Length: 60
Image (tube, rainbow, N blue to C red; front, side, top):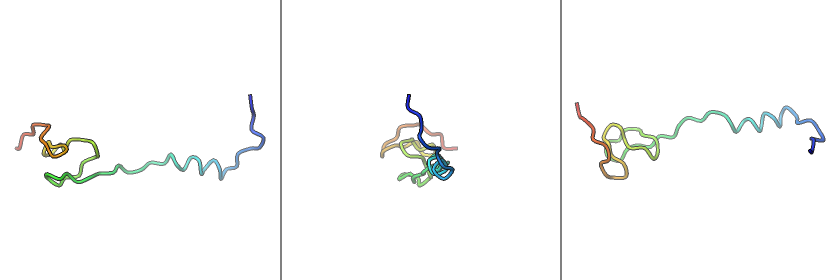
């Protein structure tokens, strides 16, 4: 099995692990009601997805 010839520097380790940092979720606005919703998810406030009603929502 191959072994590394040189030790990986601290800078290289940090650069590699920098890609694993937390990112805030991207939220889109619903075209029907305007609330903020994650992509590819039906809107919980109005129940629409891709310009059609997919969830029955009780308006209280």
